[in-house]
Image (tube, rainbow, N blue to C red; front, side, top):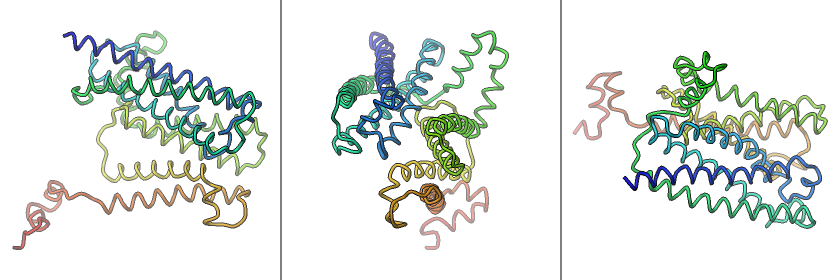
Amino acid sequence: MEHVKENRRACPAAVWTSLGTAGVFEALTVLETQDKTVRAASPWQDDPYDVVVSLAQFAVPVLALVIALRLLVWRAPGGADRARQTVRAAGALLTLVGLTVVSEWAAVIAGAPASPSGTWASVLIGGLVVSSVLTLVAAVSLARCRRRRRSAGGPGSDWLGDAVLLCRRIPVLRRWAGPDAAVWVRRRAMTVFVTLSTLTAATLTGAQAIGERWTDPLLIAWFLVVAATSHLAFCVISNAVAGFIARPPRTRPRRIAEASAVAGCVAISVATAFRDALWPLFGTGSLTSVPALAALTLGAGLATSLVTAALLLACSPYDPAGLRRRFGAAATHLRRPGAHR
């Protein structure tokens, strides 16, 4: 009993430590990306480092918000599943922060794109040290909590159920929150992810276009696609890790299509981050043309998606039960190794 009580105290404490780390990281990230004077002194202001920072700037507060909201129903029924899933989500949050911190340290060590000197550069590097220490402390605390929770069973609930529980406590949202709404979202999770990613990307694209005074429609459309695909990959991968929405079983072709699409989305982000290094493999001179930029990055995503789909189709596991259903027991016998001996 004492061990159970210790687990109940340790897990929320570890999660809150992760949220505090994310808050400090986000405050520093907003400062270094939104203030032009500070951004000009940032060692990681350009790609490939800026791609990681830009994604983290959006993803970290979103993850932190949903984790904090779930803590409001921590003592509701389903505590074992909730603790396990929340710890996994906090782990995903710290992983994203950690990858961004590593990317920023890489920029400092490389001394690019700007030499890390000046007052603001020193402030940013000092903040990076603080974020690194906090991330390490939070990761250790979370790892201890995960070891204690290792014996927990499989998932019996998801975050969507807790969201419905929270909404039913608010009179304005009570009529819209119910089991039918949760079932609708679970059945159309991919549609929800695509819609949220597109809306978020449209907002960011509009702000970027206004701030940078873009007038090229192709450049705006390319940025919209890159932002939408990166956010879609984040939604799908984070949902697979933390179980925000418990998706019903899907057919194998649909699983392959979704996995291939996510692989293509990730490839677009990677190609965008390393476009200057990749361009000499396909063209000459510097990459200054928007059509060439779109062809390089989106082409990389399309090629990766097609290759992923081909590999998944080629690596189909042997399924005796499926063969029986399709062709009967005789076909299964013919496919079994050594059947003709």
